Image 1 (cartoon, one colour):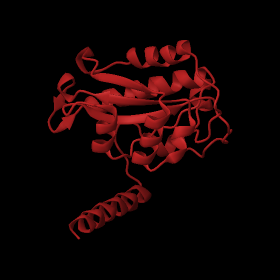
Image 2 (cartoon, helix red, strand yellow):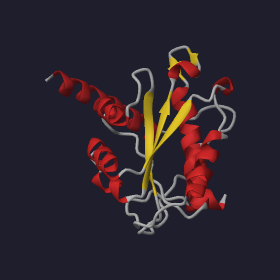
Image 3 (cartoon, one colour):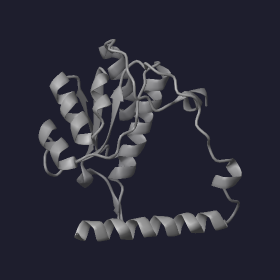
Length: 191
């Protein structure tokens, strides 16, 4: 539980290099993650090239990413994961792998910051990712140059119910706000 409690999103990194053993350790943690039917749809790109790191920072609109000695990009092959109804499970498989990687990095004293918003087509082009493969997430990897404090977390009562789902008034208003934002985004995309 200590590693989970210690994990923070790090946005400032020292320039100290990461050993290949440490990179292999976090990749091994990701490799051991469970996946749909054990299909193991994920592949990770370890980016250490300075110019590629700057491109990734620009594509993500997060220039600070290039400070880290490495950026690990999580890709997934949707054809090597399951589909149930309209839910594609490669995203879940990749999420579990990334969380394993991030917690392993924390155990080594390395910092990470989950990044899931980027221009996928540009990122795929920069990293030579094939068309049938999806870029799901990425994280910088390096020694932290900051020590953020703990974040406020919801209580167990707010995130759990017993035997059936109980919806509170605040959840209803959050859902309505979410739907309004989705509709406004759609309208903006039409303009």
